[in-house]
Image 1: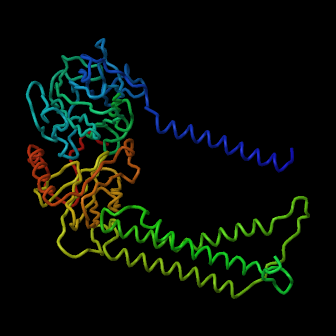
Image 2: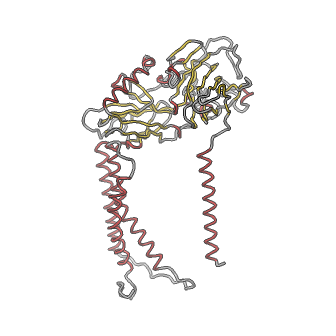
Image 3: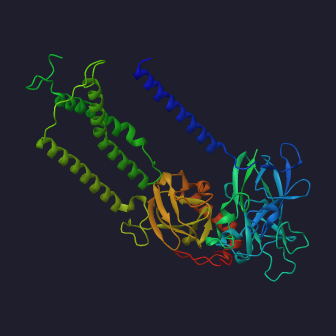
Length: 227
Length: 284
């Protein structure tokens, strides 16, 4: 083989290898779903399935769920066995009715934008807090939000009073601890990969309250993997 | 090749060949680029500013076309004419000598091009800001009445306030057609950048800063809004769609939004060009 031909073949091989690597990288970026999704059990199957989603928000996730960051504020999800898990990527069926129950054990931090104090994108644009239907909460009393901006879904969660008795220190928290129970219903619609987040600057000790757990999937952010 | 122009030394006149080929190629390519490629250049025609940007992009692309043609012609000619035959001895080319005419022509041509583009860009910028953020005291202010819309960025969503409609705030950007819009862009937390692509609008959203940009909408249309400043975990998801609608549709939409957000209106701060949100009780 002539030296020139060898060089050309070498260059072609390098280009091909680089192309394959770039292809892998791009496909990984465009298809990566993040951490494995937790499949939320379906209560009623069918064309329009029904799902119960039970989650809680805690001021500190504790060493049981996060040995590396026990002081991170976090969401937890309750699985079919009734155990709490620190998973924030949830697989839900498309066109499903999702009944959500949130137990909030955390105190108030206050919303940076009062606009988010009004629930939206849920049935009747009304949430039920401790049995009372509400269409707004005082923004300063917000502890967290459960928001899926791509679905137009925003639900503000009121915080536990600062002077409440029997407050929860570390997760998992018991229902005997001071908390608010927030319930609402939304519909998943079309298949897709929707991010959800908290809008309250609730990450204590981080700049502007938006670092650490607010910038890490697995605590105050996640995905709805609608399939 | 006997008919080719030759130098006194008997060599073909390469420069003349290259220049002729360049002129011919440029004469063909430049009008094609201006006429066919130009109108398809970004960002689109959803606003007067966007259309002006298309014109600016067309002008710049047309001007750069002869430059690209020259490079291509020279490159191809050099490859064809000056390559060494297989097995042939490598021979050094003739020494390059200074030519004042060529140097002066080069400096004059490139200077004229750059100065023209600088003048053209400045003129376009001073007309109406060209869709860019001009800070709190804009110098290029279009005349006539304007609809003021505030863009509020936060991690990780844009919301929009309409001060002339009671300070209504929504997560949707809807604008009336054929209307002069005065955008006031700000942020509640980190640095963001409001980029309404098809409207030709891009303005940084900085906390405590009022960044003013102008646009004039055209007919009914849709456009995309992105954050163009890396702002954290969900920066890549900080996008939405906006609409330009008729005046009557806009009025109906405003009323509908006022009803939807009636319950939160009592908690909304007075309209201001910037906000310094409080509380941040747990923030660092």
